[in-house]
Structure formats: structure tokens, C-alpha cells
Figure 1 (tube, one colour):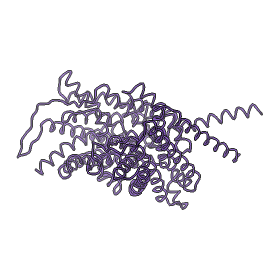
Figure 2 (cartoon, rainbow over the protein chains, first blue to last red):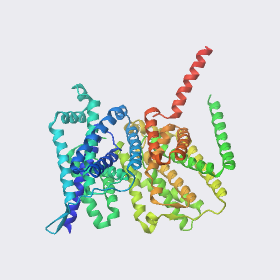
Figure 3 (cartoon, rainbow over the protein chains, first blue to last red):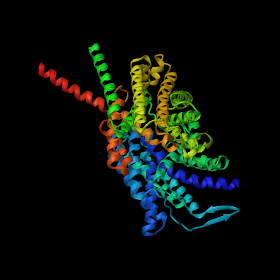
Figure 4 (cartoon, rainbow over the protein chains, first blue to last red):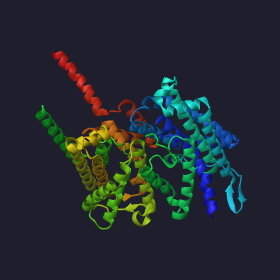
Length: 285
Length: 320
């Protein structure tokens, strides 16, 4: 039984990691809390669900399409709107993206309705050594881990990735080196939205989705960032897996209605005692 | 100049009180209801302004303390306390609760403080959803209904709520002119410097947080008595945590008049939206937020004063 809880926790945890890594990147590089992130996840999930149901094709293919769309949306929002206030006090950027989230959520409820929707993927489940594993969730997990790994590689080895890391480390020095910081910000925000769409696509393969889940996804991203530390891909991965395990065990020991609370309470505790996170070095404020 | 200013302040205050009484006696039930909601947001905005405006800590925890007050008042009233006693009891409970929580939250800064306060709202909602023995869970709690015709009850709560909003305004006036308020503004400017010139930073921060949260809790308790039914989604509504800071920003954070002006403009807009675009209510709220951030981040009052002084300058130029 214990092994089953661990497996469940790791399965959901890798999805959490995927949907939080973009949020963490944006926070680390732009020093803003993107309250829109949850709405990006939901939008990504809906593109996948409606794509598969209306046109057929594999969910993974449609997740790719969702990633492209969300990257474009994120890029435009950052370049056109958020860049104008990106250096303002955090209350301003926080409230601004909160307002955008309200707008996005309301529009999505009106367009998609609040009814939960899900992909019906009849992959069944595997029985290995007495453990029951849903194939759809396994695929979602593999996909989420793959994309998170891809982002890690991108930041480490591609020139745009190095530019993002340079801006994160020292914005002024990066400007002196000739980097176009507003454009790097827009690309970073676009990547954040792209990873949200990937996380949303993976979520849609495994769970029913409704537009009002944006706050829930955003809450997971908060907790994961604090657990894992800011702006690093491995941090988000660790944070996501830890949160998945915590929720899985929280559901067993306290009852499933408390599983979300467990994450928040642990987050508050960490904020008090270790503000830089479990894995984090001194983070950005 | 000083005495002239005081005369104007007193005249303005007296006009406000008279207008409120006149409105309360003559208004129909719909307007009375709208006026009560306005007064509630005025009270919450003043409460938020102490921490968010003067002290500069971006709290998104309004709903947590408002909701705490709703439940504290409801539980006290259901245990047999009259509502006149339940309200101060809720304020006291909120003060103790926030004194404990404040020590934890106020150690954080910036983004972490903002996220921490939101997390408190979420945790409180989950606790009230799940602690069924105390809160009756998602079914919600009924409160004793106040005797009297709808109009009498409406008038009663209108006057109670506006009196409380007036109390919050006067308290703000007092704080703004005291050493305490000066200390809070110092903390906003530079916490380390404030500590170096001898301000007990943590003590000041916790004190401001406690005053702010006690006001929110009392508002919540009055609200609970008025609506006579509360549930977790209503009491701990995250929209309240965002709309109250937006109201203060709209009027002008850290100003005595800011919350009042912001709340009036916001409620007029909000009612207009409710009547005309009910399906797009939170979308319009989002648009209002975005517009405030881009066009009047300093608030209407400061804009008005700025424009006003430009006009004055023209007059004096003409006179010269």
C-alpha cells in the first residue's frame, strides 16, 4: 500500500513540476509573481481537450500546438503590457496580473462553461507487482518530465537560454553586454506560458479540467516554488515531487479533503524558517 | 492657514454625517443595501490602508480576517451572545489571531509576504470547509435573524456599518497624525533605517497589523449578523482580498481620504456592472484593475490634487 501512495505522489508530482517550472522561471528572471499562470495552464488544457475532441489526433500533438499558441500569447502580453511596469513595486505587478487572471478566468468560463471536461483516453491501467498504474497518467508523467528536462537543457546550452540566465543573474550587466532585456523578458514570459500549456496538456490527459481550476494550479505553483527555491528547473522538479508526495500522504493520514491545506501549511512553515526553500540558495526577493 | 484647514475638515465631516443620515432615512431598500455595502468596503479599505498604504506591506489577506470575523461573530451569536457583544468579541478574536499570525507573516518581505497572506486565506477557507463541528462545513451557518421589518433592519445595519466606517476613518486620521503613523511611513521608506533611528520595527508592524485585522474582523461580524447566513466561499472570498487593495489604490494608498474616494468610485462602477453585465462581472473587475494600474497608480485623490494645484498656479499667474 505504501508503494502505491509513493507512486501516486510521484505521478502527480511530476505534473506539478511541469506546471510550476514556468512560474518559477518568470519569478526568478523577471522578479514578478505571475498570477496569470493558472489561467495559462487551464487554457493549455482546453486547447488540448477541444483539439482532440473536435479534430482527433494525439493529445501530445495538440499539447505541442497549445505550447505554440501560449508562447505567442505570453510573448505579446509581456512585450505589450507587463514590460511597461516590470520594474514597479511588486504590489503593482502582482495586482496587474491578478486583474488579468480575473479577466481570463471569466472569459474562459463564458466560452468553455464551468462544466468539468476530460479526455477519454482508453489506455487502461497496468498491474505491476500489485501496483495499479494508469497508463494515461504514466504517459502524462513521462511527457511532463521530458519537457521539464528540455527546458533545463535549453537554459543550459542554447544561446537564448544563456541570455535568460544572464539577465536573471544581473540585468544591468546583461544590458551592457548588448542583450535586449525587454525582449529577453518577453521570451522568458513566453516560455513560462509555454510550460504552463505543457503542464495543462499533461493534466488534461490525466484529470478532468474546469476553468475555475486556475486558482488551484496557481496555488500549487506557489507552494512548489517555495519548496524548491526560485528560478531553477531542478528546484521546481524537487518541489513538484515533494508536493505530490506530501499531498498523497496527507490524503492518507488526514483525509483527502485536507490534502491541499497540507501543502499551504508546509509552505508557510518553510517561508518562516527557510525562506530560500529546501533546495534553494538565497533567492530573489 | 492651519485653522482654515481645520474649519474645512470639520465642515466636510459634518456635511458627510448629515448626508449619510439624510440618505439613511430617505433611501429605498435597494439604495440602502448599496449604501451598506459601500460602507462595508469603506471600513475594509481603511483597515487595509493601515498595513498596505501607510506601512507599505502588500497584504492580500483581507478575506482571511473578514472571514474570521464572520465566523467568530456567528459562533458567538449562536452560543447566545447578543450581536452588540458578538462584534467586539470578533474584533478581539481577530486581534489575538492576527497578533499570532502577524509575527509569522511580517517576517517575510515582498513577494513572499504577498503569497503568504494569500495562503492564509486559502488555508482558512479549507479549515472552515472541513472543521464541521465548529463551522458546519460547506453547508454554512445560520445566524439569529434580527427582529423588525426589512426596512427597519436595513436602516439599522446601514447606520451601524456607516458608523463603523466612520470610526475606521477617524482611527486613520489619528494614526496618520501620530508618532505611530510616522513610524509606519518610515518603515515603508526603509525598514533598516527606521530600525536605526530607534523605531521598534517588529513591534510597530505587528501593532499596525493587529489594528488593521481587528477592524476587518469586526466588519465581518457585522456583515454576518446582517446577512444572517455565512458559508466558507462567501466569508473567505479571494475576490475581496484583491478588490479592497484595488479600492485603496484607486483612491490613493496612504492617504486619509483615499479609501473613501476609492470605495465610492468602485461601488458605483461595480453596481453598474452588476446591473448591465452580470456574466462578465469579474472580467470587468479585471479590466478596472488593469486600468487603475496603468492610468492612475497613484490614485484619484493625488491626481486631483495635482491637477488642482495646476489650476491654482494658473490663477495666481493671472493675478500676477
